[in-house]
Length: 264
Ligand code: PGA
Image (tube, rainbow, N blue to C red; front, side):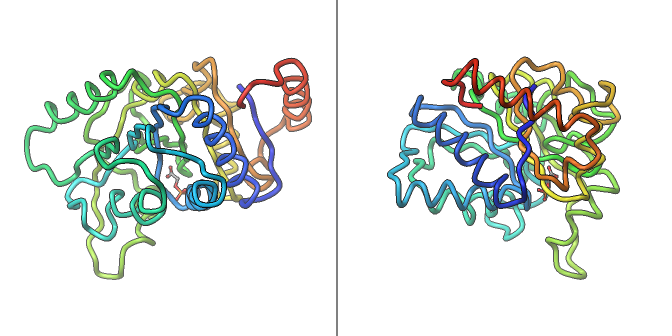
């Protein structure tokens, strides 16, 4: 596990974008797992800039998003489809047929639908690099506390903490979805590489539990300790509850020295 300590949100965004860009340049047909959420916006902005100004080519990249609210049609302004199109897909050249986001508007057949999402990931060859945010409750995707560490793509009820955090996106009086379709923790752990980004004090406890706490279903992100290739990109505020920052800096320096070709 690598912890890349960054000064602030801007640095987290540019570092994360650089890591993704390096993977895309090395493998233009990368299968990229994507996340939504406020934290990802700066990263998507920087990737869009790299596409525009540095000819970063996404034409062969295949994407799979982690999750989508149940009950929102793709064109709903608060759906994750809309978020992704606004913040990323409309600024880069990924052909629409290569973009996959769970459909939250289906009314029945969730089991079959979720199994088909998993099958599509497998048919694409599996996810090469999965990008994650983290919730204050330690969730990754919408895998709320008590999610099985082996869970697969499925409908999930949102926790109180997630409802409180995400209601800021919905207008007063507008009903917020209370469930989502999300890749499972088991699905996420099958990605070859994982990068989690976090910024701000509100995430400090969840980040510390994920990196230094015990592996527990109470903190979904702690399951990442089981993965052989995870990079956390966190700013100083999000890192403030970590007890071993000095050690993480030394690991970073040593890794850069011993494996200079590593794409973090
Ligand atoms: P945020 O969400 O980036 O909006 O804080 C992260 C998450 O809930 O995974």
